Amino acid sequence: MLPSLQPYVDSYSKSSDARIVVTNSDGLVVSTSDTTIAFGTDFSNRPEVAGALKGLPAVGERDSATLGERMLYVAVPVLLGDKVLGVVRFSHPKSHVDKEVQDHVMGIVAAGLITLLAAACVAIPLALTIARPISRLKTSTESLADGDFTVHADDTKGPPEVRELSRSFNAMAGRIGLMLESQQHFSGAVSHQLRTPLTALRLRLDQAQEAVGDSTSPVAMALEASRVETDRLQEMIEQLLALSRLEAGSTVTVKVNAAVIVRSRVAMWEPLAHERNVTLRIVGLESAPCVALDGALEQIVDNYIDNALTAAPDNSTITIEVHRAHRHIHVDVIDEGPGLSEEQRGIAFERFWRGSETENAPGTGLGLSIVRQLAVASGGVAELLPRANGERGLMARISLLAR
Figure (cartoon, rainbow, N blue to C red):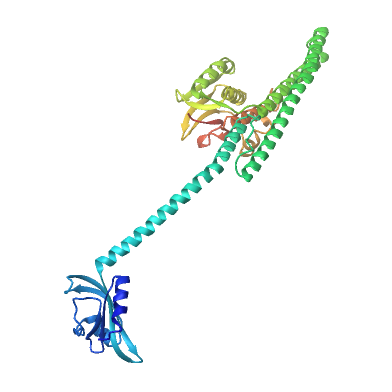
C-alpha cells in the first residue's frame, strides 16, 4: 500500500462521489475509496482493469456483482514512459449519473424558462409601446381611405420613427384635404359660371326659333342645331361636374341588393325599350346582397342599359344577368349589337371616348368614365367583355364585393 496515496483518493471520492480503485502493475488493489474492498484484492480479472494494464484506457458500463447495479466506469493506466505502473479506475452507479444529468437538464430548462419569462416581461411592454401607435396610425389611414380628410394621427406617442411617420401622415392628409377642398370649390364656381350663360343662351335660341316661325327655313334649322349642341354642352358640363364631385367625394359603402336594383331599373327602362322594339330580360339570382356607394349601382345599371339600347338592333333582346362568382356579385348587361373590338374595349372607359357607331348619337362620352369611377369608389370593377362563344354583341359587367 502507498500510505501517501490514500488521502488523495478519499478527498477526490468525497468531492466527486465516485468510487475509486488504484491497482499496481499486477492488478492488486493498493488504494480504494470503497471500504468493502480489501487492499491486495486482485482486480486483474476485471475487463476494464485488464485492458488498462495493457496500456489501453477503457470507458463503458457493466453490471457490478458486488453492488448489484449497473456501473459507469473509466479505467486509465498509470504510465512511466512505456511501462505500466498501475491502473486508476473511477466508477459511478448509472442511476446516480442519470439523476445528476437529469438535475442538470432540469436546471438548464428552468434557467431557460426564467430567461424567456424575463425576455417576455421586457418584450411585451416594448412591443405594445410600438404596436399601439402603429395601430392608431392604421385606424387613421383607414379613415383617410374612407374619405375622412380631417383625420389626425397622434404624433406625440410611440418611438421616434413612428412619431415621424405620424407627422408625415398628418402633413399628407392635410395637403390632400386642401387639394380636394379647392377642387370642390372650383367645381361649384364652374357650375355657377357656366350654367348661367348656357341657360341664357338656350332661352335666346328658343326665342329666336319662335321669332323665325318657319321650322323648315335654313335659319330655323341652324337654330335647332345650335340648340341641340347647347343641350349637349350643358349635359357634358353637368357630367364633368358630377365626375369631379365623385372623385373628391366620400367612399363610404353601404349594403345593397343588386337583384332588387336591377329589377327596379329594368322597370324604368322598359317603356323606352318597348318603343325601340327591344326586349329587356332579367335572369339570375332573386337576391344578391353586395356593397357599393349609395346610389352607385343604380347609375351604373342605367348607363349600361342606355348604351345597350343605343347599340341594340330592332327585335333584339338585352339580357341583364345577376350572378355570384366566388366572393363577388356580377351584374352583366348583354346586348346583341355590333359589339366592340378588343382595342375599343380597352379605351372605352376613357373620358370623351365614343365608338364609331355612336358618334352621331346623343351623348358626351363621359358615361363610362363615371361608371368606372363609381365602380372604383365602391370597391368593385367595371369592364366590357365579348359575349360568350363569339356571339354578336357586348357584355358590360360590374363586379361588387358580396355581403
